[in-house]
Amino acid sequence: MRTAPSVLRTAAWLAAVLLVLPLAVQAEKIKIQSLDELPVHTYAVKGSVSDLLKSDADFQAFAAQLQADVEGDLAKYEIPDKATLQRMYSTLVALHLLKGDYGPVPELIEKVKALEDKEANRLTTGLLARSLIAARQAADPAQDPEAYRAAFRAKLNELAGALPWDIVQDQIQASKGRAEIFSENLIMGMVQAQLDPVVAKSGELSGDLAAQVASLKLAIAVMLPVKAEQIAVYQGLIDAHKVEKEDIWPAREVTLDASRKLQPMIVGIWDSGVDTQVYGKTMWTNVKETADGKDDDGNGFVDDIHGIAFDVQGNPSTDLLHPKDDVGDKVWDGMQYMKGLTDLQASIDSPEASELKAHMASLDPAAVNEFLTIIGFTGLFAHGTHVAGIATAGNPFAKVLCARISFDYHPVPLPVTKEMAERHAASYAKTTRYFHDAGVRVVNMSWGWSYEEVLSSLEANGVGKTAEDRADLAREIIGILSKGLKSAMAATPDILYVAAAGNENSDVEFNVVIPSSFELPNLLVVGAVDQAGRRTSFTSTGKNVVVYANGFEVESYVPGGKRMAMSGTSMASPNACNLAAKLIAIDPSLTPERTITLIEKGADTLEGQEDLKLMNPQQSVKLLEGKAM
Image (cartoon, rainbow, N blue to C red):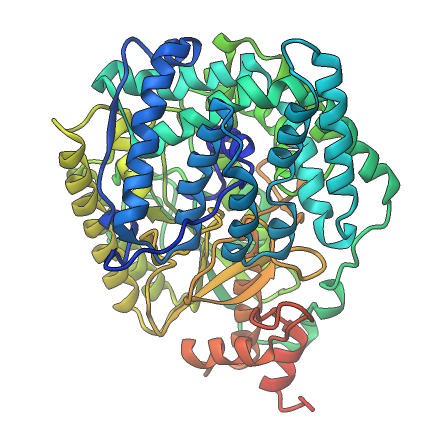
């Protein structure tokens, strides 16, 4: 389930720091259309990844093979996806830095900016690499570490301090947060929890995981020695710029007046589960059903008083809020860290974020697996309840119908099998039909599957005799999920589905992400911007992402009734769902296509990002009511 980058991927991303760019394009390359068309590379690992990271000789051989494969793919294939190219060149630059081969790096940093669509990312690309190179030229870290660190700090301060703060502040704050989190213990703990089990089962790593290993090696060997200097520079810049960004969203909001006596609107929350106690009378109720362990109304579902649920295997369940499973009451410990985690993702330096950073940095490697499990479950546990509050805010006519879908939250997830995929595909058809029969008009889907995610689950569990076998199986599985979900949505053309683009900073079509890569007349895909309407660093993009909504520090309820701010396209999507529900409440005759048109036509743009349509609820309502100027 793609709701936010994994901690391991965040660590790898920190180490790579977007220092990459494409080499000169050669003629007659083989053009590919999607990520699964790239060749599959594997890397044998003796012992464990933990051992590999500690052995310079073994790592050098590993790195040489990885570099040859990445360079070979870049030379042979024409890759249209910028994010994929950035990841590949990030790997090369990490390998160059680890070898002390700095020659190619400055030119590569300049070229990568041509691949970056997000201005803040483009401006901050290469800050750490350029500072590291300058420091290495000034002093030998082995002979004079103090002079080396001073030179690094001076160069980073010079480069970062020259950037326009109003554009780069989120990236600088996020960089500080990531630097504060990571320690060698935490990184090695994540390796033990997520990568060592892969090698234990198969004896090898895929190209994607191998690239992460290179980035983690860079983090340990090169980044961590100047951690204090990074934090000091970033904190100095933050202290010098205390101006908050303008929040454009309150002025755009629409609140429906209960006195209008509009038609009740049933909103489907197809998510990880909803705490029905939080929403009380706002929950849709099936009056023909009672909590007696029976299918009273004969519709195929037991005790479906406020909706339906399916577990991680795709089997029916009666739990609308995800059971605590092996986490138990430790979920409430995790909930204490949720605010800090979401603040870190949103680049907010809050007390909760500081507490979480201190806790993560101090973790013993042996404790990391349990911590990641608790955090992973807590995010799943809270997600649907939070989404439901956003989708129905300011709409007294909205009723929440819950349809729970489940994903694995463990550092090493269950392998996605064909049988599991077929059960999920069947559950999609049952769910959309349930929505239709209940009279649901709009459904929020802040979740998705991807080819890469399925492939990773297979690799983590050693499924398949070879990497090619796993890739073929992953293509088949994502095909089953895709066909089942798309046909289920298409079979209910009267329902508008609103989907989150994803938080992978990638093209949803190229990366084979469903449902956000679907082209359906009753589907609206939503990306995320911040409080000022500027594109977030995490939001995925693509031709299907036609409108952007607030996905930054959006406040809503979590299980138990507390309110919490979270960030992500998972929060942007229900903001658009909220507007759609209000438009349909005002005019129940609206079709999904007409609703999408009103949202798109009501959207506007900001200077500097004219290609990005920002949702404007007030303007869309005016268009519907014939009051637009």
